[in-house]
Every structure is written in structure tokens, then in C-alpha cells.
Image (cartoon, rainbow, N blue to C red; front, side, top):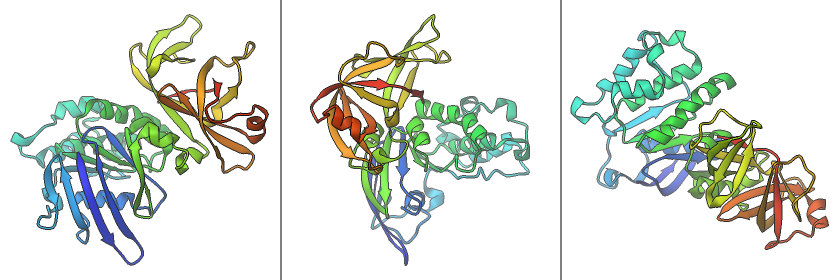
Length: 354
């Protein structure tokens, strides 16, 4: 676990933030620009000397009233928006720079392991100028990992990349999420990135903690702004169990629910995340007999709330122990007499696999 409680005051900003985040997986730091995300990373890295409070990482004291480990004494990896590679060193030597920062007896991550994990073997002799943006970020992440960090800090690692480079690097970040036993704190402005990569979320506002919790819960809480955004969505953990002759694949979700999706490029038994946008969920009082929509699930209405668009409402739906969101017109809500506790059918028009 990573436990912290930081207090930092500047002329135009103050940070008062405490939490305990999981010691494994990816924790997303999310919120508007200027809310304190990067400042929090800098506090954990020991780069903010004016900060008061404490920081315990896996039961080790890195900072309290009596102790303050200097940045170079903290076993962290830090990945910035730009890779910040040494331009005169090839990929191998950039990676080896990270490896040399840790004594051989303390290394927990091996060179060949990182090269394989991040798909760097074919790039090993190239200079940074010969790499794409996504490739440079993969090298930067590899260099950070080769310091055998206790915590990996990633400050908007995809923000400077174009869409093609983001698509290129995302599968490698997902592999990090699934295969590394190192806690990652990820700063991002993109709900799509967070939905694909994170397990836990801290929602920040004005240097304060607005809310925190498991990602699925945070995305669907109607008392938080995430559920009222244009791309409001829910995440269902699923496994691909079958590819049909009609080029449709079957997903098995927790609780025994199944979904159909027109994807065949995912291996069977592979765990995936099914992202369902609120705008892609329609509601019906009975299962439609003649419809092009393939996915129809029985759900119960938990909560109905106002939406930023005055003509819409946002509806929180219980799918067993899972949660979905539906954004429908206020007219439809009134016409169907929808109310909390009522059982309806969710017609899911679109699913994205993360």
C-alpha cells in the first residue's frame, strides 16, 4: 500500500490530500487541469520540499515529521509526457542507464524482461531520433522500470502522442498493468485511457480529494461529474468464451451475463474490459421481438438523476452486482413511467473492448 497525507501551500494553490492506495495495479489521478495531480506525483517523488505530512510505501517511512528521503533516495520510476531520452545514446544504452542506477544485488527487474514486455528487441540499436513518439515512450517506460522502482509514476505519458502513436503504445501499457507487480500512479485527462488501464481512481478537485474508489464504481456514481460527462460509461469485466460462425464473439461477464460483440481478434479465455457508453444504452419495458440490437439484459433501476442536457436524464442500472448507465430523453423516461426499483430491459447498442 501507498499511504500519504500531504499539505502544501503556495500563493495561488494549496494541496490538502490524504489517501491509501493499493500496492498493486494502476491508480488513476483524475481531475481538471490545476487540481493537483502532477503536484501529488512530485510530492511522492520528493521534489516538493515545502510539503508537510507523511508518506509510507509498503510499510516503509519515506517522509514524516522526522524523516525526509531525498528524491535520489526514493526507489521510484518517473515517466513524463515526453520520453526525455538521451539523444546521443541508442535504445540499449538508454535502457542501461536505468539499469545502472540500481545495484546488481537490488535489481528486481531484468533487462531482457523489459525488452520483451515492451517489444523493444527490434529497436535496440536505434537512436531516439529514429523512433516514433510511441516507441520513445516505450523506451522511457523501460528505462524507468529498469531502476527496479517500488512505485512507478506516470505523468500523462500519452498526452504528447498523436492518435496513431497512442494506439501503438496502449497494448504495451495494458501488458504492464497485467504482468507487473509494481504499483502505478497514472495522471491522465482521458477517460478512455483511464477506463482501459486503471483499477482504482482518485478524483481531485482544487487540491482536495473529491472521491476515491474502484474504477467501475467511480465511473458510475451519479453524484460525481464523471457519470454526467459526454462520454459517461460503465466497465464490465468479461472473458471471451466463443467465436461464432456469424463472426460474432460471446463475452461472459461476472454474474453469468453474456454479451455479443462483432470482434474476432480476441483469443478465447482472454480477459477483457467491455466499455459501454451511457448514450449507447436504450431502455424497454419488455424484450423487443423485432430489433437489430443483439444485447438485451434485464436490469433494475437504481437511481434517476438530472443530466447537464435539460432534455435528458441519467439512469443508474443494476445488472446483478454490476452497474450500467443509460442516458435517455426525459420524454421517454416519463412516457415509460420509469422509477427506482422498476425492472426494465437494457438494449445495448455499442460495446468497446478495452
